[in-house]
Image 1: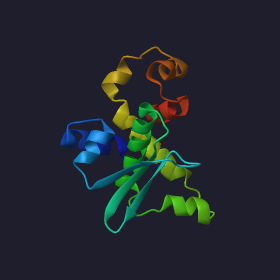
Image 2: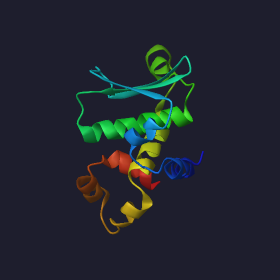
Image 3: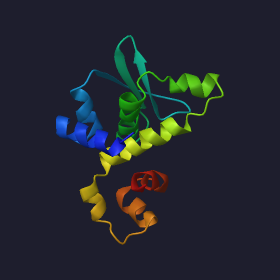
Length: 140
């Protein structure tokens, strides 16, 4: 799966890298509510795309979570990862890594990443606010 190509195509179509702006042009219901044990999740229900985000997160964290859940929407629409996580022994790590990679390609474009040439991952993490693990996925 070419995640970068998918993100580039979506950015070109929607003219934004902001996941909240992007969902305005899509059939997405955004629900901000208090969540326990998760920061957000995606649900496809009765032909509706629903993204739930923990309202207690910072705006920056909500943006990352929204981008991550958009990744699930575009790549794993019919996969009920919440069910798989809680009711089966199937590993959903691959889905999560793909959604994180999608989020990082959306939020951290190549042009911005070039500004950090010569920086360590820890330095890029400090400057951008993105977790080192997310940056590692982005740089693969």
